[in-house]
Length: 251
Ligand SMILES: Nc1ncnc2c1ncn2[C@@H]1O[C@H](COP(=O)(O)OP(=O)(O)OP(=O)(O)O)[C@@H](O)[C@H]1O
Ligand SMILES: [Mg+2]
Image: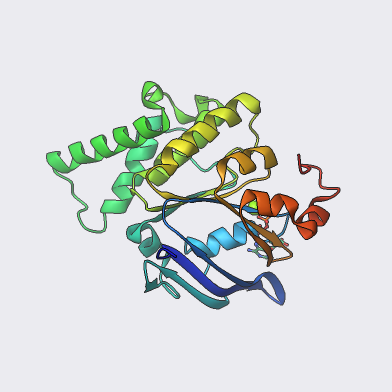
């Protein structure tokens, strides 16, 4: 078995007395796409919040490249190579596409060098352009972000996450609110990004997940109830039972 990029052991997160996530143990190998699925409220976003340092876990340990990240502040996660996008679109609507990405690149640097001279500024511009290129938004670089189509706004969020050049990219429902065409574009983008990094994504669109993922984790009531290949998950009776009657279905 190859070495894990990320491993979680007995990870849990409570809110008051409520256990949103409980006893999750898993390891993630590099350069794979893993989907995290489960009904609404299953704990998927909470899992991502814990994996990206947004929330400290209440129990358990997280290790990234063998380093224990338990108790590490959020900005360190990004610095170490873990980046994420959010379930709800999270961009600066009044800034241009390019400015959105440049601000992210700058925020990442400012702790080391606040007063950027010309070279630094050029470097930020190049980094922002490279991230936009990676998500196919070069042609929209000067448009005010709020005027982008929904799918393009989601791609912009991914560009913002990419300026940190992360080894691990966490995408929380990247196709939320998208129709079939935009979803197709996002799948193609994720496939391109997956060639160079490890991706974890939360998704409800089952067909898409089955085509895209090397592996699927299923959460239910905060617990990991299944973990395996798409074929394995499709055949799992408990997974089928959990999804029965879900509005987003299992088709
Ligand atoms: N900050 C919080 N404070 C209190 N409860 C929370 C908090 N965050 C999440 N929860 C609760 O934890 C449970 C899991 O929420 P989470 O957002 O992780 O679910 P999810 O699987 O992402 O659901 P969805 O598919 O609807 O996005 C829910 O019952 C939710 O109400
Ligand atoms: Mg969620």
